[in-house]
Image (tube, rainbow, N blue to C red; front, side, top):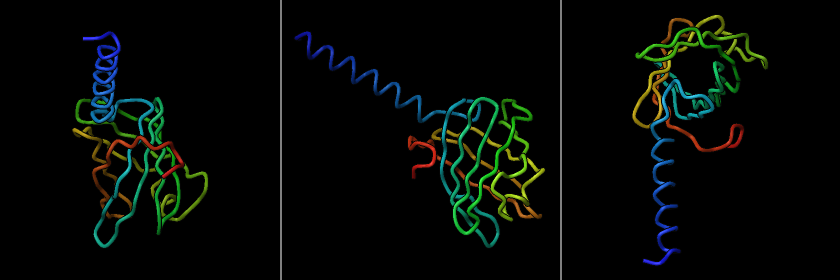
Length: 136
């Protein structure tokens, strides 16, 4: 086997390992992004989430169109719980989340997110997202 072919095979193997690791990112991984749809009785919305260190930021799509930060409250083998902070850009949906919390549990290819807002439980599976934050 030539040196060039061996180098390409090593590079391909490394890329495969890295991509598998990205797919298995869990709730405790800093600097990871997830996206998907959250549902509640009579409602659904798209959400993008980004974790950076002990901070989490959620961005909700239409019809809510708001963003809210959260800080790590507790982390254990069952998942990570975050406490919502006041939303910086307002929005009735996000304002109604404060001062509640959100639970994030690891899944094979992302996370499962659950929170309560005004007596309605919102939940859904979010996939690991390679898209840069703000670009979707």
